[in-house]
Amino acid sequence: MSDVSDEDESPWIVAVCPVTPELAAQIAGMVELDWEDPELTEKAMLAADGWRSTGDYLGDLNEKAYTPAGHLVYGDDRFAMPFAYEYWIHPDGAWAEDFWGEQDGWRSLVDPPAGTFTAQLDAVASQFAALLGQPDHDVTHESRRWRYRIWRRGDNVLVVAPGLDGFSYHQFEHAYVQIRRLPADAPLPPVTELPDFLMW
Image (spheres, rainbow, N blue to C red):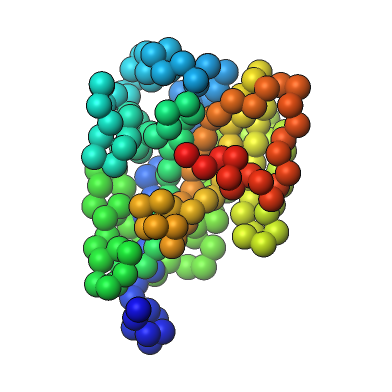
């Protein structure tokens, strides 16, 4: 493991792929689909202007579709789309190179001001609030300090939140939009259970 002085010299990165108002509107238009029906949801994504599917096989990072902006979409029974990652680069760390910043449609903010990652979350949540109204739930996981903005539509929820990034072996965080099933008459799980409930 690298010592603290080495880590202090490693650049912090916030890699972002913008969520435009047009993209947010496309996603909001899909919020009430049955995301447990992969054939239905693939057709809906392909019908959205500029979206692409990986077809019968998943992509190299297990993605199943791409937005026009370059986001990768994941999830067997849900819609899961990261739009920002926060990490540091170190030759002996989880990320030796700036992987996300080099992907089409993404850009890296190197050693950005404090709060940049949170500002990305707030900006995307604001996009959906403009389309769907204020969230039905706005809760914070106290120990992780993760804020969940959640809109309920039919038997689904649309969520804007941070979480642990699986590609870094859960060392770093990403920010994502997710649509998944939660019956209209079912309570929201306790906030302490939301990280597991929303994991994909």
